[in-house]
Amino acid sequence: MDDLLPGMLHLSRDGGATLTRQLTDQLRDLITKGRLALGQRLPSSRQLAQSLDVSRNTVSFAIEQLAAEGYLSLSAGRRPEVAAGLSLDRRRTSSRSNCAESARISLSPWARGLHRANWPPVHDGRPRPFQPGLADEREFPHEVWSRCLRRAARNAPLRRDRPINHPPLQEALLGHLVVHRGIKAKASQILIVPTAQSGLTLVANALLERGDHAWIESPGYGGANVALHAAGAIVSAMPLDAQGMAISSAKDAPRLIFVTPSHQYPTGRLMPIGRRLELLRFAEAAGACIIEDDYDGEFHYEARPVAALQGLATSPRVFYLGTFSKSTYADIRFGYVVVPEAQIEIFELAQRHMGMLTSITMQDALAEFISAGAYLGHIRRMTRLYKGRRDRMLQALASEAGSRLTVEAPAGGMQLLARCHGTANDRKLSARLLEAGVVSRALSIMTYHKTDEQGLFLGFAAWNEKEIDRAARVLGRIVR
Image (tube, rainbow, N blue to C red):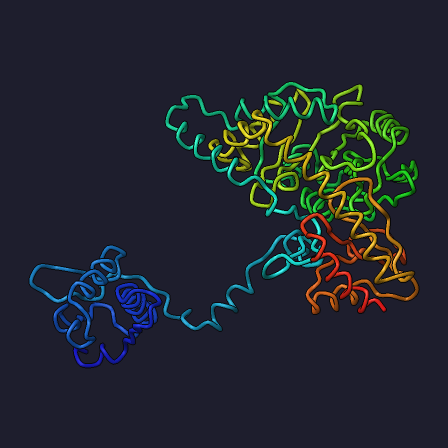
């Protein structure tokens, strides 16, 4: 073995993994695959180092690491040996055996159905026009945010009480939501969660029992569809009319209703006050709760926004859901949920049980960012910028695609819907656009009732005028 072992090891000096890491991994692999027998002695560290043309320290560090992991036994004055008591299942060493073993693992019905959900949309590589849901991180005040982060990090050792929802952020965020979204709540009602999707999952799991009925908009947000199904709900797709979700007494009475009233996802329609009040009255009569997703409700271009459903409700049935990833940029993914006051304690407990916790330092930085006025200033500046980009997008699509697309001009938000005419297949069209470097989302993927509607969901917020014009020319050529 003294002569054979060096020939079984192949160390590379091309600048990848260190020699110590390579030697450790290769020796471990030889042991686990049975190529080194239990109780077998290895060459001394000096012999092995000379054979491999490496330093003795390299070999010593590798042997000590494997001894610490239990693969080798060391004793004074003796060469290392493969641990005699090592328990290895040598029957499962091939990758084919491992794959077969994995295939026998039983998945839940929810996990087996995930691939059919078409959500979340994943695009490899860097973001490209017209990828929906993205803010322009180039326009974010990174220097201001950096200062907030540095101060929050310096203050971290001084914090004694560390509740999972940071009171300074709750207070700062509430002040903003009361003025700009008409929210009626106490600061303690705001839960800070890792993402808006996790907030949706939290509410769904806390409210629904398996077999309960839930309503979603159709077309609508895929994240709501998968979260409600995962909670065991029977999900009904509610088609839209000109005012938003069409409320139907013919459907089974829901326990939970998910809506996006500020900018319906994906049509961008604003639910008018009459339909909002109708929805609230229906929920009250049916004993249903509402999840109001205000995912990009900060950006309004035509008029002052309608107050949030949560602020209009006369009884505590609305859970208001928001996110910082759209109003700031994608790396600040924090979401938040405004829960009814009577449910604060149980929802905070559920938040802990589900591990939906966020960095207190990050929360502290966000609190300063909002309190200092930087958040509102950024939103106002981006509202003006995004309005210009929306208008440029409308102009470019009209010029390049002509009558082949009908575009619904959103009153706010960060994306728009372009409906296809004739026999166009939006999924095939979206795939062809992706090959040409333009990202879109097919409307049919987001539709959960039977319909022939076809369209493309296109983001405009993250792209400047040159990028919009260039991508619109590609889109127009492919559509034509």
